[in-house]
Each structure stands twice: as structure tokens, then as C-alpha cells.
Amino acid sequence: MMLTDAYSRRFNYVRLSVTESCNFRCTYCLPDGTDCHSRSGELTLAEIRRLIIAFAKLGAKKVRITGGEPSLRKDLTEIIATCKAVPGIEKVALTTNGYRLKRDAQAWQEAGLDAVNVSVDSLDADTFHLVTGQDKLADILAGIHYAKAIGIKQVKINTVLLKQHNALALPDFLNFVKQQDIALRFIELMRTGDNANFYQHQHLSGASIQQQLLADGWQLNPKARTDGPALEYSHSDYQGKIGLIMPYSKDFCADCNRLRVSSSGQLYLCLFTDTYQDLRSLLQTDDSATLMRFLQQSVQGKAFSHQLTQDYSGSTRHLAQIGG
Image (cartoon, rainbow, N blue to C red):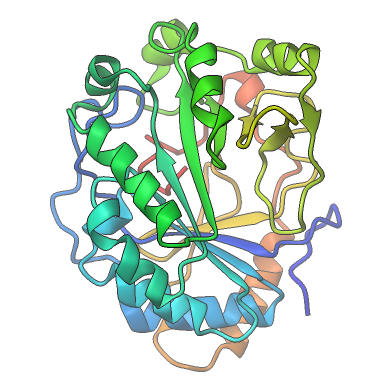
């Protein structure tokens, strides 16, 4: 069985937010800090297990655990182990701000973590502090190197493109990946409900970076079946890779393979939808058949594309809401 929508897109990749809370104050996401006053409504470990079992029975192969900041969940190691233990799940990944990476990476790997993406929006300590509200760049970079050293299979860096903060920093990022087998992905800033003014001042297209990479001999790599939306490039002179996530580009949604579930059990068919389906009531028993039918019916209503180019971001207030 496979989750397939009306446009014949197959969904084998689940992005699961486990909390909306975050301990960073990134300018493009939560500049005033987290707005979560209570975390009592977050999915329990048992509910997460039932959810992932149903998705796996419908062909899901990959789970990415996101937030907010997922390491704020005290049971994150157990969540990783639970997802990895589900038959059919081949890859468990984590997106984190890296705050607890050096402390917990060993436990996460032993629980079954295959890949980790770490948000690093600048390699300059002062700029990093300005963007994130945390003076932690050195610690986070140390955590990235530690994750590589202990053998986590894939370690990637996510960098949000910001016109006033890192638009001229491509040489620094290229130098960073020259001698390190790390994939660094530039992500175009996306319009959300809370950042309209910030978006107008800071949005930077990834097209200029793409053109420069191609002009300098970088080659586009083929995608694996559970890969996300990044276009990843490699170069024979560099150990690492450079990726680009450009949601405003033509046909960005044509090969979508991802569905999202919020930390309170709401199914989002798109990051920028204005509706969602509540799965919580279907996660209270181990009978996955009803949940599977609901998921199959729901994906038929998935739109072909987001409407970001029409300046419409749906009900997404900020990227911490359902993990970006």
C-alpha cells in the first residue's frame, strides 16, 4: 500500500514535529521567543508509535523529527528509538538547532538516528548571535564535528538565506565544506504569517548561488527516493556538498513526497496550507486501519502547489509551528 495523491505523487517521508517550543530567538522565526505556554498537548510516545506504524504500513520509509527544538523533549531519545523500531522505517533523521548536540548525539545514534540537520545561519560568531539570540556558534560547530566523529551517517547544515546577514558569505561556506564531508544547504527565507515585514527586507533568492555553483563546475547530484526538496551539488575539489532549497522556484512542488504532523497530532498536507486534519482521536488505540483509511482519503485533497508566489502562506504563523 502506498499513500498517493490525485497527482500521482507518492508520500514516503513523514516530518513529525514533537514540540513547538524553542530555546532560540531566530529573527526569521521566533524573534520574541517561543509562544508556547504549555506543552501538555504534545503527542505521547504511544501516540507517536501508532502514528508512525500507520504511515509505515502505507509506504513511509523516512521519518524526520522536528520542532520547534526537538531536543527540548526529555524523551527525544525514546522517540528516535520508537520510530526506528517500526517495521518499514529505513531512516530516522533529526532537525535541531544543535544546542544539545554534543551532549546527546551519542545517545541519539545508539537509539537509531541516521541523520541530523543542524541550523547554522552564519559562520561568524557575532552574526550568528545576532540572528539566533544565542552566543553558541563554537559549541554548535563542536557538536557537528562530534556527530561526524561518532559515526552518524549523514550530518548536514541548514542555512537560511538572509540578505542583510549572509548574502556575501558564500566564500566562507564554500571554504567550510572544502575539507569536510558535510552537506550545507541554503534555504530561501519563506513568508509566514508573522514575518511579512521581515521577509520583504531579508528575502534572497537562491538562484544567484545556483548560477555561481554551475559556473564554477559544481554538478547536480541525483536524488534518492526519500530525499527532501534540496537540489544538491558536488565538486571534485570539495569533500562536502552544497544544497539549495528554493520554494519559490518553478515546479518546486511537482515531486513532493512529504507529509507533516504537528506536535499536537494535526496532519498538514502542505507547510503552507490553511487547513489541517486532526488525527489525535485516531491515535488512542493500536488499531491502525481507521487511521490508514483517513490518511489515504486526506491526501486526495492535497493541492498541487503552495501559493507562496501569490504572497499567501496559509495558516502557518511561523516555522516552529510545524517544523518547517
